[in-house]
Length: 124
Image (cartoon, rainbow, N blue to C red; front, side):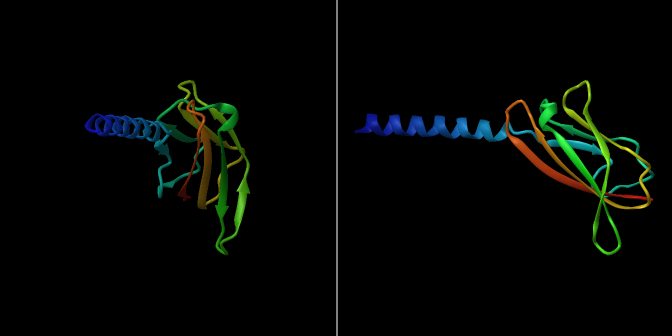
Protein backbone atom coordinates (compact mmCIF):
# COMPACT_ATOMS: atom_id res chain seq x y z
CA UNK A 1 0.00 0.00 0.00
CA UNK A 2 2.79 2.47 0.85
CA UNK A 3 4.47 1.70 -2.50
CA UNK A 4 1.22 2.71 -4.25
CA UNK A 5 1.07 5.93 -2.22
CA UNK A 6 4.68 6.72 -3.16
CA UNK A 7 3.94 6.05 -6.84
CA UNK A 8 0.87 8.30 -6.78
CA UNK A 9 2.80 11.02 -4.92
CA UNK A 10 5.69 10.80 -7.39
CA UNK A 11 3.33 10.97 -10.37
CA UNK A 12 1.50 13.93 -8.85
CA UNK A 13 4.73 15.86 -8.29
CA UNK A 14 5.91 15.11 -11.85
CA UNK A 15 2.55 16.18 -13.31
CA UNK A 16 2.58 19.40 -11.26
CA UNK A 17 6.06 20.33 -12.46
CA UNK A 18 5.17 19.44 -16.06
CA UNK A 19 1.99 21.55 -16.05
CA UNK A 20 3.82 24.46 -14.39
CA UNK A 21 6.54 24.41 -17.04
CA UNK A 22 3.94 24.48 -19.80
CA UNK A 23 2.14 27.44 -18.21
CA UNK A 24 5.41 29.33 -17.83
CA UNK A 25 6.29 28.78 -21.50
CA UNK A 26 3.57 31.09 -22.86
CA UNK A 27 4.76 34.25 -24.52
CA UNK A 28 4.69 37.41 -22.43
CA UNK A 29 4.99 41.04 -23.41
CA UNK A 30 8.37 42.14 -21.99
CA UNK A 31 8.27 45.81 -22.98
CA UNK A 32 6.83 48.23 -25.51
CA UNK A 33 7.63 51.57 -27.07
CA UNK A 34 5.56 53.51 -26.25
CA UNK A 35 4.76 51.92 -22.90
CA UNK A 36 1.36 51.76 -21.23
CA UNK A 37 0.21 55.28 -20.35
CA UNK A 38 3.06 57.11 -22.10
CA UNK A 39 2.67 60.59 -23.58
CA UNK A 40 4.49 60.65 -26.92
CA UNK A 41 4.84 62.76 -30.05
CA UNK A 42 3.68 61.11 -33.29
CA UNK A 43 5.47 57.74 -33.15
CA UNK A 44 6.49 56.34 -36.53
CA UNK A 45 7.01 52.83 -35.13
CA UNK A 46 5.35 51.07 -32.21
CA UNK A 47 7.44 48.17 -30.86
CA UNK A 48 6.18 45.24 -28.80
CA UNK A 49 8.96 43.04 -27.36
CA UNK A 50 7.99 39.50 -26.37
CA UNK A 51 9.66 36.67 -24.44
CA UNK A 52 9.53 34.11 -27.28
CA UNK A 53 9.91 34.01 -31.05
CA UNK A 54 6.71 35.01 -32.86
CA UNK A 55 5.02 33.31 -35.81
CA UNK A 56 4.71 36.29 -38.20
CA UNK A 57 1.66 35.14 -40.18
CA UNK A 58 -0.39 34.81 -36.97
CA UNK A 59 0.82 37.93 -35.14
CA UNK A 60 -1.02 41.19 -35.63
CA UNK A 61 -2.07 44.47 -34.09
CA UNK A 62 -4.91 46.95 -34.38
CA UNK A 63 -4.56 50.64 -33.50
CA UNK A 64 -7.56 52.82 -32.71
CA UNK A 65 -7.90 56.44 -31.68
CA UNK A 66 -10.46 56.94 -28.92
CA UNK A 67 -12.22 60.24 -29.59
CA UNK A 68 -13.88 62.51 -27.01
CA UNK A 69 -17.24 60.77 -27.40
CA UNK A 70 -15.65 57.38 -26.62
CA UNK A 71 -15.90 56.13 -30.20
CA UNK A 72 -13.02 54.20 -31.74
CA UNK A 73 -11.53 55.39 -35.02
CA UNK A 74 -9.34 52.74 -36.70
CA UNK A 75 -5.85 53.74 -37.77
CA UNK A 76 -4.18 51.94 -40.67
CA UNK A 77 -0.93 50.27 -39.61
CA UNK A 78 1.62 48.11 -41.38
CA UNK A 79 2.66 45.16 -39.22
CA UNK A 80 5.92 43.24 -39.43
CA UNK A 81 8.34 41.29 -37.27
CA UNK A 82 11.86 42.45 -36.51
CA UNK A 83 14.97 40.45 -37.28
CA UNK A 84 15.17 39.20 -33.67
CA UNK A 85 11.82 37.37 -34.22
CA UNK A 86 10.59 38.48 -30.77
CA UNK A 87 9.48 42.00 -31.67
CA UNK A 88 6.26 43.00 -33.39
CA UNK A 89 6.55 46.32 -35.26
CA UNK A 90 3.54 48.46 -36.10
CA UNK A 91 4.04 51.44 -38.40
CA UNK A 92 1.12 53.87 -38.72
CA UNK A 93 0.36 54.56 -42.39
CA UNK A 94 0.02 58.27 -41.63
CA UNK A 95 0.90 60.74 -38.87
CA UNK A 96 -1.00 60.20 -35.64
CA UNK A 97 -3.10 63.15 -34.57
CA UNK A 98 -3.06 64.34 -30.97
CA UNK A 99 -5.32 62.14 -28.88
CA UNK A 100 -5.70 58.89 -26.96
CA UNK A 101 -4.84 55.60 -28.65
CA UNK A 102 -5.40 51.95 -27.83
CA UNK A 103 -3.30 49.21 -29.38
CA UNK A 104 -4.76 45.71 -29.33
CA UNK A 105 -2.42 42.86 -30.21
CA UNK A 106 -2.60 39.14 -30.77
CA UNK A 107 0.54 37.08 -31.20
CA UNK A 108 1.31 33.43 -31.64
CA UNK A 109 4.73 32.21 -30.62
CA UNK A 110 6.67 29.06 -31.33
CA UNK A 111 4.64 27.27 -28.60
CA UNK A 112 1.56 27.76 -30.88
CA UNK A 113 -0.58 29.40 -28.18
CA UNK A 114 -2.24 32.72 -29.04
CA UNK A 115 -1.73 35.53 -26.53
CA UNK A 116 -3.82 38.71 -26.49
CA UNK A 117 -3.20 42.07 -24.92
CA UNK A 118 -3.54 45.82 -25.23
CA UNK A 119 -1.94 49.06 -24.20
CA UNK A 120 -2.96 52.71 -24.27
CA UNK A 121 -0.91 55.84 -24.87
CA UNK A 122 -1.49 59.48 -25.71
CA UNK A 123 -0.10 61.46 -28.62
CA UNK A 124 0.52 65.10 -27.70
